Length: 340
Image (cartoon, rainbow, N blue to C red):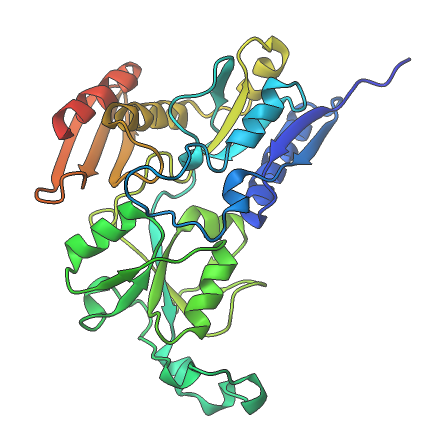
């Protein structure tokens, strides 16, 4: 008998992307043990533009920075499904492709990553052969430090306009600068560069890379630089970007076989929540780098959506509304109309 062709899962090659794709592949194999699933690693435009500014104004960066090449593979039949960090997936998908499923969402909150004052103060942690220029200017902070605990003019690095505007809304005196690179690269920069005091990363990404925030505030993991602490930011301080913490599975619209497979991976409440958030983002006319944030939560048969827009820097706009779960898209559209 002929061997059935494997089902190809397209993914980026970053550590986080691979962790997410392997998680989806494992779920597929567990649910459909008789089918074969294989990963196909594809380099995207975003991977090639590591030095490009992610915070440029005026829309100079192309849409779908981290998704376009995966979508091309789907359209050409070179892959059967694509696994994305949903926050990277544009709200307007190419003709013939659909967002078919979202597994259960992870924690949507952001995390403040910074150096430990106790670690820096310990001379045993500074061997001369490991010392590099600039390390003498390193300063650290206490465990569980909040934004309010950072000194005036502290420098926090982020490539997200959403994070930048919310940081400045909470602390107008902060110096917010840009940073590029994957999760571990950004951590390394904070650990080593005295001109940076902290960075902000998604808790979901940290968790999926098997990094752990210990009870004492220390950040631990195989690839985590020594001496880093982490504080989870409240949603009142830092509202997440649309789709944060969720994984999106994109397929061809007419592929009924794959649709039935990924349907088994879908988490209904997550899908409805991100539907509302993505409808809001679409209504605002923005992409993943727009200075807006939104988070939908479900309780019983109702969904609440809270959002903030920094598009008009002269006046920050915030709103919250509720609707029935089945009206997720309408809720998002109405929220966009209120905040435009």
